[in-house]
Image 1: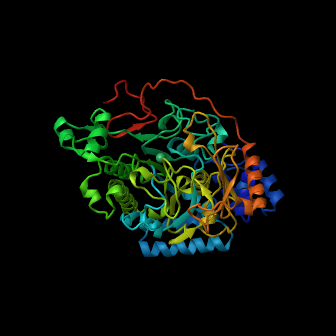
Image 2: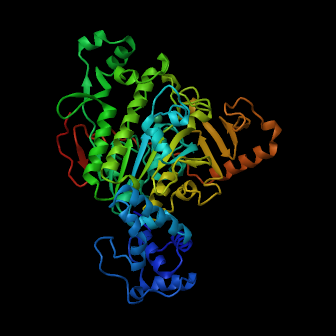
Image 3: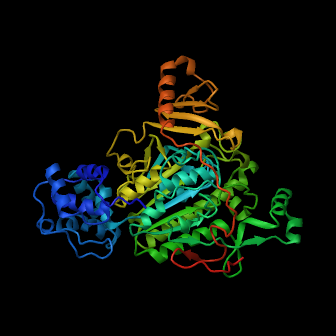
Length: 569
Ligand SMILES: [Ca+2]
């Protein structure tokens, strides 16, 4: 794996930006590179950047008292982060004050909080819902589905209004997320399910695991080949897929027609009811939530990265029980989906409560988002935008998703961020937060300075889409560019460009390309330049399924444990 243990120019530039003297630079370099820089290298850098007098400790030679990647912090760094550490050790009000003072001090000194907090290795929980639409959460304007826990997450963080999936649907979306780059960088243009994710660059999970994180995955995978399961690409543990409930003939006979039809086509197996370790039938999303809490309970004392990508709220939600649907006022056409979303909200509540229980709330970045836009077939909505899964894949609603970042004490609370971002930014943001350098292969940027308001320029001036994969569903072919309020779009290369002003025309009803030829030309040229940096369409290898990438059973499978011969059915 290409972990940059040398001081790369990008790391050097980052450290130079974030530090003000030799001692802080030394600490930042150690955090960024995962090991102590040599005296010779450090002296050269210190002289080059005028960091001042090299600390006595460094001048005598690098600190050799190391355990793994852990190193003793220089006095200045230790002192600086002490207040932040106390945040988790004292009572809430006092800790809040200390953290604020510390962050203010860091801000005054010109040091982004992320790199200073990095010494504490913050935790990360990344929640990646399947097919959750832009307009289906209370904090995004939804009125018929109560989502109090997700709304609170937004109130305790930043709600992003221009967060994009550049490679929908499920599979390419997740691949780009895990690789931190446009899928087209490794030949993934459309669905191309089964195409491998590259082995010459680390996944987000691999990168974090290699730098001291416990990394766990729960739920749907849908990444890479049939052999590239979570444990093969860097996760240290994965929640086993619980056995699904099997409907009896009597149950099917009494079920509504739609449910009977779906379940029968799946061999009487449920999609959303599973059987827990005690043999009790439970709702899968609830089961997932319990697994999240279990993971945090077990790893509360060490840095962790938890990736929850549930089956929810993907179709079919027909099984959603009344105890969930009765909590919504949704119309019949979206009532089952509404119930599924309510259950997701319940799990967010459980997660946040567990973080509070262990006093980890302020030490954990929670990212909540979706893998692609709304499923109109189940009544999902992208309001105020149009489109989504199925027939609407040419519109904003297919690619724009709700996204929330929450980490009280670091990220502002109750704010909104309106500039462009993409799911591949999560990789860069998380690694930066952990004090690690962003690997060179990444397309994303560290979003934290933008979310905190420290930076006011655009994280991305442009974002691009290109799905012209011959084997993909024709309806999903898409060529597009986003810039400021503009969306340039066409379905095929042969088509004329269409241009929309999303600020005044969120429903994309008025093509104004003829009125703005200069803007069309400029955005099209940017798309051409970007597409010239991509690799050709990849070839999907013929790999037979073999063992499932995630074993069935209860509890967890660990990377370090040899896979059992018998996999529980
Ligand atoms: Ca999806």
